[in-house]
Image 1 (spheres, rainbow, N blue to C red):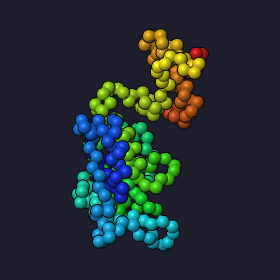
Image 2 (cartoon, helix red, strand yellow):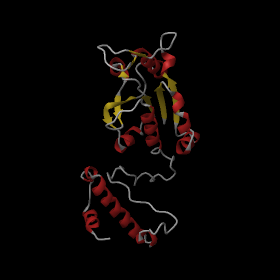
Image 3 (spheres, helix red, strand yellow):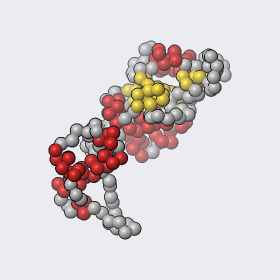
Image 4 (cartoon, rainbow, N blue to C red):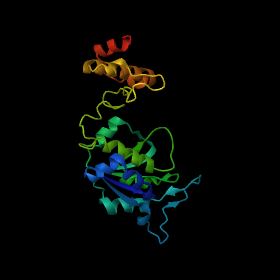
Length: 241
């Protein structure tokens, strides 16, 4: 999968891309990230990318020409792939949307800055606006890295086991993930749940499902109401430990 990232600060990306799973995905050819500096496409000799907003108000606005030039020179006119702008006004990014976007062979990610992006560039070239949640950041670089990370781990072969993401929190089941334990068996007076030590895979699966149901009900009742539960799930939920 290829990401074309349009940003005023391309140096923010490389340290994260050069570590762990993303580094391995790039080395195996599953992931390609191409960084484009919007400033390189400004029309004036000083490479100005922002200006004061019409109508007044605080902050500056990202000019339409540099961004439009960057997208069209790089991706064609119209752009040959979906163009995503990170914006507090966009639809909220979640695991279901991540799975949907991970099917695309190429995505363009636009990292806004300043007070906002000139609406004309958005209307002409952006195909989708996406938000991380109900808060505001200084720019779109962190959201872009988050999206690249979330989508990359869904690509075939990146995590090795093709079922590795099936039990993730916010997966297709809508449930939060069960708790995890590792060595040592005793830590500060706390042990391991007996089911995990039993060697009985059916018992382990039951315990994990029960914990997932209980966690979701307690911590995210909104997600719990969206989950499709079986009669067996309800019995697990009501069972004593």
